Amino acid sequence: QVQLVESGGGLVQVGGSLRLSCAASGRIFSSYAMSWFHQAPGKEREFVVAISWSSGSTYYADSVKGRFTISRDNAKNTVYLQMNNLKPEDTALYYCALTSSPWRSVVLGVGKYDYWGQGTQVTVSS
Image 1 (spheres, rainbow, N blue to C red):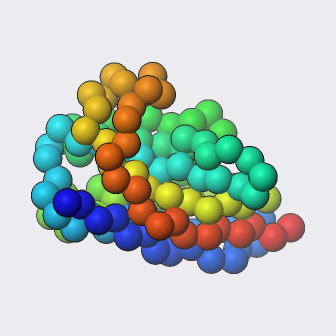
Image 2: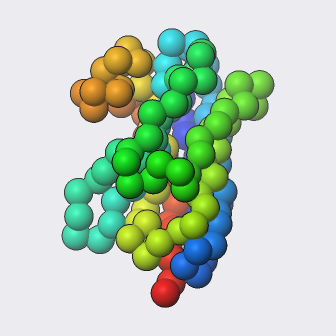
């Protein structure tokens, strides 16, 4: 069993930065991938970014390219999301999720996620 715990959310002004963390406990296989999703009030959950646990390959949603950076520390079983130049539309509950689906499936948006964190709130004020 794997548990995911997010942290680092908060209130920030437009143009500011935050770094989210997702710490995983339990056994993480090298074939896994970790993704971040966000969900704003009244909206569906959306994919933000993913990283392959083994290769470090990344895949970003167009809306965050150039502003967000995902990274991982395999030794700590932790994934980070550095968010820069934040915009009001980034306001949402951010979740990390772990998948055993192949990387190609993750990129195509059809990966099946096995574990989810509880979420951390990011609020960007204008």
